[in-house]
Image 1 (cartoon, helix red, strand yellow):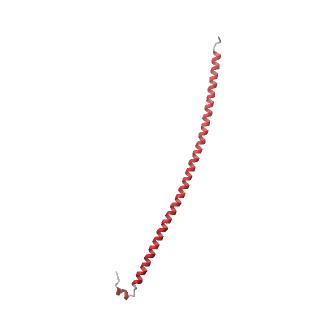
Image 2: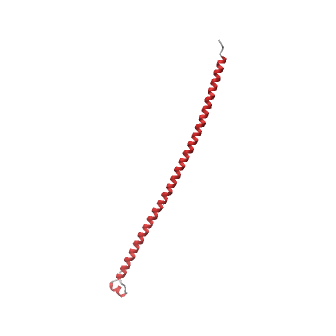
Image 3: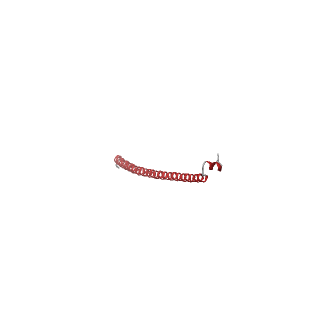
Length: 113
């Protein structure tokens, strides 16, 4: 419990000095608490910045990958278009030759008047 002023004098306790040391201790504890909060805040902020940078790098890598896939797809589509175009030309020339053969056969088989 609490001491009376007489009891404090009997044990040679300077109450003013004790109160001052308690205030100093409280001030030091408040300063340490503020320092701890500031360092936690700065640590969290730095961690978020580092994570943002990593995310940016991951995003850049993903975009680069998507563009590379797009370029590869266009190359494949151009090759496919070339193959289809060649096949179309071969089919057309085959049909033209067949048509020419049919016409030739048809004119040769017609009786002369």
